[in-house]
Length: 347
Ligand SMILES: *[C@@H]1O[C@H](CO)[C@@H](O)[C@H](O)[C@H]1NC(C)=O
Ligand SMILES: *[C@@H]1O[C@H](CO)[C@@H](O)[C@H](O)[C@H]1NC(C)=O
Image (cartoon, rainbow, N blue to C red; front, side, top):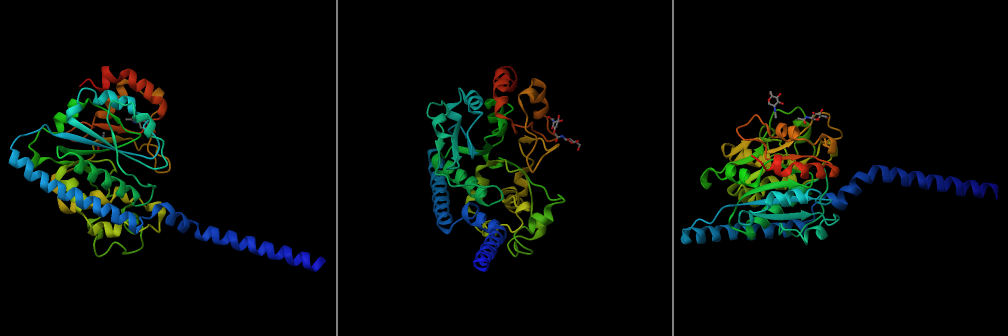
């Protein structure tokens, strides 16, 4: 009796310890394989979407030229969210009165809670077929490319593509942004995307998928980093959805999850390889990294919102003011609405 219960006890202890051991060792892989990896089916789905968008764009180009008329150019606002759209009322005021000059597309993570809000909205947003997204994985690159492709397919007059998150707010009026983007002829539209090469963490990020894993497609000296938030000119949006070579590497899972932010590398690396002179190398989305915690920037709360804050967030060292800013807490919506007409949209 004594010996058999000891045996059972030791056996169950052994089993639970082994189970713990395996869970501990395998858990990153289990997590990776569930939501962070791109399945072949999803990848093929995307490929066919990107192909349709690229083909439609060349057909539309010919049609536009043959019509030889110039419809007003539009900005496609690409909203990427995995929660809700807290700042929707502010964006509604931003878009008001400009129906012919913009489109809104939303990639809402299937687990997010966005849709009911928008049914009654004046924005007329289009939900694009969305898939799961997760931090530290290539799923965000896929989501952003899906947004670009859907916007290209939907309206040939979309000539600029601005990526916006649920934490972003506008810092200027719609007219100000539209006028500044379209002040040059469309052959000369620049993309506004941050492209940096001298960051101390770059070697770790380059090796995140294993040493030399990016070779031969991407050499270290070509590897770049930049803010996730860009405003792309149409020719660059097309370049991004047609791209296959770098994607083959960027879709690999990271072994070093702490150094894995594929969306901060894929777009800057690609554009700096293909058309460095066509890009501003800075972003139009202001973010405050002072005192950042766990890779998240400073999040402004209601008590920090003031006309002075808006003015200081707009100020940049480049030729253009910042257009957008992040991040803000949901509570800051109310004070932002109060200064919207008198401060944010007055420029
Ligand atoms: C950036 O955030 C810090 C707090 O982390 C704050 O003290 C500072 O005022 C912020 N800068 C701007 C320009 O808002
Ligand atoms: C502008 O450049 C100065 C000097 O490099 C720097 O201290 C400041 O933070 C920059 N301002 C912005 C808004 O990036």
